Amino acid sequence: MQDDLPKTGNFLAGRLRHAMSRREQELLEELMGPVREYGPDHVLQRRAELVSESTILMDGFIIRSVTEGGQRQIVEINVPGDFVDLHGFALKRLDHDLTALGPVRVTSVSHIDLANALAKEPHLARILWFATLLEAAIHREWILKMGQLRADARLAHVFAELWQRLDFVGRSRRNGFDTPLKQTDLADICGTTPVYINRLLRDLREADMAEFRRGRVWVSSREKLERHCRFSPDYLYGQGTLAVRDELDPENPDVRTAATG
Amino acid sequence: MQDDLPKTGNFLAGRLRHAMSRREQELLEELMGPVREYGPDHVLQRRAELVSESTILMDGFIIRSVTEGGQRQIVEINVPGDFVDLHGFALKRLDHDLTALGPVRVTSVSHIDLANALAKEPHLARILWFATLLEAAIHREWILKMGQLRADARLAHVFAELWQRLDFVGRSRRNGFDTPLKQTDLADICGTTPVYINRLLRDLREADMAEFRRGRVWVSSREKLERHCRFSPDYLYGQGTLAVRDELDPENPDVRTAATG
DNA sequence: CGTTGAATTGACACCGTTCAACGACAGTGG
DNA sequence: CCACTGTCGTTGAACGGTGTCAATTCAACG
Image (cartoon, rainbow over all chains, first blue to last red; front, side, top):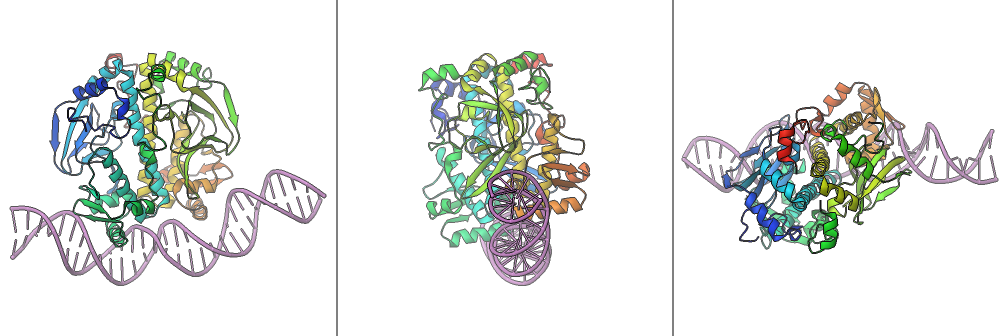
């Protein structure tokens, strides 16, 4: 993260951040309001409520969940640097709840301010659009993993993805990462039960892949873990096969002028 | 569909179409290239290929799928009126394949033309952004259904959602809808096997909910079907609770001026 | 030290997979 | 007209992954 951009320095880090000009980065930073802190389980946004501002997560984890008939399904996890409800800017009402997992630090921009800024900055608007499409790509990967993998591999996939995303924003450790996730949360992510998650965690431990305990994940063999769940980070649009280098990239001014909108 | 807009008349029909001004509707129509037709199983776009144009589906069904290790997972179904690869406009490369299910009619716009148009039409850009967010909302619902519902309800959910979406664009029937989906496709959507799908279809038939045969779905009791899979169309952002009526709506010019970006 | 939420373990039932075989049907070529 | 072929749909039986229920242990905290 850039130290002089404490609120937005992690936004798109490792992905398309290089496509933002320095001026755009500063503009976004200036748009954000004061930093707020919330404790665990704080609900930042409830389903169907009118959304009037969008929030960037600076520290901590936020989950996006839907609860129906007592059953909770977590449909997305947000890590530092994520614009957690940017889609509220266009959708106005969300179809899910946003909840802090552990303690979080966030900062917001009102939709009025954002709209005024984007009216003058079509390229920045494209960047934000891109950011919401990244989320959709992660959604598709989750559908894929829910449909194809068995519970043990789904669980491994959660760890592999989170680790990679925390890598992007410099919040990982050498052999894993910290997270406030509980076994119950893992169950609601993987679409299984806490009891079974517990057994799967034991399996992962005994297979020397990953160890989960008290808010920390240690990975014994990243390669083994990622192979087990067929994890390939392409869909995160980092520096791999699918990386975006073309018209959104300011280093390619010709195309950019033609294609910025 | 508006008869004078044969290519784009169904785009966002039933959802936010009313937020497009007549001029914007005509502009979009003019942007689209010639109509093309493809037969069943035609691959419109392959994973990781560079995308240089975006396509609107006029007739037929297109699936978005990922194939890994011989297993295919369908992560999205597109129906007439859908902008099938609008996200390619910003992502440049897709992380999945696009395949025609039955015969399809499509029309495309090059990213250059689209970018030039959107540079002058920020409100239209917001509309297109919104359209991609609708897709993401559908993705989240799929994650929800994969995580929470058992296979029989997942299958019912596919029917309920498709019927509703075909309703939006006037392609449904009184008691169901036509679709080129095969049992194998249903399996790859629901994350189960063709054999089991076959048994589930029998169950749905015997429970007087829906009958699937030779490319047509008859629904005996829509209410029973939707209750069985807890289907609630909110997430499709039609006229329900989550409907968008605020700043994107041109009938509300005050807010719109402030918020159009 | 009692309380509470979370993690762990065991037994058992069931949802869904797998393998194998068969039936229905359309297209093709003789 | 029929035989052949391939695709899709249908059915049965055995197996195993996962859910459910219940009880127990553990960690954190006042």
